[in-house]
Structures are given as structure tokens and as C-alpha cells.
Length: 398
Ligand code: ATP
Ligand code: MG
Image 1 (spheres, rainbow, N blue to C red):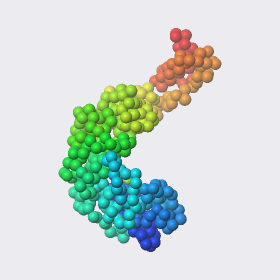
Image 2 (image 1 turned 45 degrees about the vertical axis):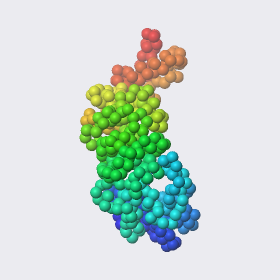
Image 3 (image 1 turned 180 degrees about the horizontal axis):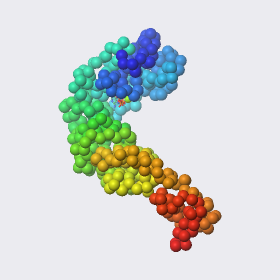
Image 4 (image 1 turned 60 degrees about the vertical axis):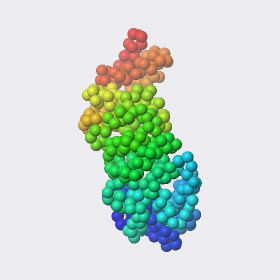
């Protein structure tokens, strides 16, 4: 058993000693067998949540209605979910009601893909009811059971297929892919927030171009906000060399750039994906920086306006197209800015009103903006007296 599971073994053992079954399941088993990094460990058990809580002193109800309890053990939390089935799917969406069961097989059967339906026992034994190990070896995403039925139960699984294809750099089994092509329109039934999670992960995977290719070939893109008429622009990304995006800000900046969205366009596109307002603002900042990097015009002003994180994100997107700058250079240019944020300006609005005699109002805002620009670009030193006389000069000239 890989070292990462060691600290969790006593947890499984205690559940077993109490007369129940417990296994490591899902992504952690898949990723361990692949030799990939594991980010969290999921446990499935025949014990009901109340039974888990009776076994362990310290637990947190993280999703008790779905059967999930977090066990706290030596400072680590382990998500433990009771075996369950999800019957009564309506409207092609994951059902709200789950039924707890005592059988591991029932629980594995409701999982999406064979490679995600493996269970690992505390003694190292792998339970593989759907030939997930063979599919792992062949790098294949294959639905558990009949693809058609599984996508009817929960249409999000189609997006998950293309996201795992990208994440793991796997192919999709032929029948599973056909199932996606046949049922792609059902994606329209799924909450956009859930689609967004998978879409972002798809573009942050090991082979995003391959995931994106499948997203286009299967027609799933037609049922995503703002993408239904964008096949050509999305397909133009496919020949680009393997890229690596690390955050949702980078993902959506790439989209905004590639779709040539205006500031307003970014806002309505991202609103249709129900992203946060912070993300909208972040993307609006990054797109002009991508343009500057592309044009080789990364001056102090754009650096100041974009901020360091924004610049690095814009650069990550520029790299997708082969325009990236050395990151060190961007960091140095940022470090050399005379001021790094507006509040470092040596005067504020109050001082300009009192000492430069400027009236509160839109002119004041414009003056502060001009002063900031002059300081950032190095035309004017960041000194209070010089800024005040410059402000007076601007005010006089109107
Ligand atoms: P990642 O490492 O990217 O989180 P993961 O396999 O852990 O991958 P999750 O989305 O965290 O993916 O889901 C955990 C497990 O729950 C999956 O491995 C799968 O067994 C099951 N699962 C998740 N979503 C679905 C779904 N929509 N339909 C069926 N099974 C699902
Ligand atoms: Mg997971």
C-alpha cells in the first residue's frame, strides 16, 4: 500500500473492527495505480453515518444527508461516505435523494467510469468489478454499464468523460464516446455551475487540447453558454502545442482572448457561466495584458494596472500561443515599478482638495488618475509637493 494511505489505515481498521466494511475509493485509487499525485483520500463504508459517529470521537457532518462524514484523526480529515445507490433519476440530473446500502458492489455500480469504480482494501487488495484495471492500463475512459443509461441518469457524466480524457491524457472508449454524441443535448439540463467545474478541469488537464477536441467532436460545446457558435475559434486552439493552465482565471482569460471578447463581452459571457464578479474583473484585467505581451509592449502602466498575479496569468495564456515572456523578467519589471498600487501615491484626494484647492467631483478622479499614470511611467517622482503642483497645473489647464 503506498505510503500516502498509511496514516488512513488505522481509520479503515477501526471501522472493520466495529463489524463494517471500509475501502479507499474513487480518484485516490485510480491515481495511485497510475502513479499520479493524490490530493485527497476518499473512504466508502457499509457503516451508516450514525454508526461512523459512534465509532469515532471526532467527526464533522460535512454532508450527512448524502452519507458523508469527515473523520478527524491525528489532525487529518478523512471524508467517509456510506455505500449508496442513486435511484429515481429525473430530468437527467443527479438525484437529490440517495439510498444507503450495505453492499460495496451496489455503490461501485453507480459510479461513472470503470477507472473511477475501483476500491482498495486496507490490506492492499483491489476490488475491480468492472475491469477498471484493464482500462487504466489501456488509458481508456469507459462508462460503467450502458453509456446511454448512465448519461440519461446524469448528463454531467458526459462532461466528466472529456475532462478525465484531458486530465489523464486518456482516450474515450468507442461505445462511451458514441453515447456522448447521441446524448449531448441532455447537457442542457445540467446546472451551469456543475458544467463549469468540469470545463475548467478539462482545460487544466494534462492534455487539454485532446479534451477540447473531444468536447467539440461530441457536440457537447453546443450546450455550453456562449460556445454554441464558437466551434471554429475553439478548434483553432487544437494545433497549439501542449499547454498548461493552472487556475480558473487563466482558463477563462484564454477563452475570452480566443473568442475576442470585449470588456462588456467578457462580463456577459462569464455571467452566462455564473462565475463570480471577482473572476469577471480578473479576466477583464488579464486580456489587455495578453495583448501587450503579444505586441511586445509591456510597459509600466500595463504592469501596474494588471498587477503581478494578473501578469503571470496573462503570460501563461500568452505561452499557449508561443508568445510568453520569461517570467523572471515580468517579476523584475513589476518589482521596479515606482508604486505598486494606487494607495502608494504620495497624495490622496483629501490632500488635493485641501492643499491644491481642487473641488471634489469627477475632475478630482481624473487628476488622481493622471498623477498615478505619471508616477507609474516614471515621468514624475512620487513626492507630495511635486504631485500637488502638478495637480494644480492640470486643474488650471482644465
Ligand atoms: P479528481 O481527482 O479530479 O477529484 P475524482 O475521481 O476524485 O477526480 P470527483 O469528482 O472528486 O472525481 O468524484 C469522486 C468519485 O465519485 C469519482 O471517482 C466517481 O467514482 C464518483 N463520481 C463523481 N461524480 C460522479 C457522477 N456524476 N456520476 C457517477 N459517479 C460520480
Ligand atoms: Mg476528487
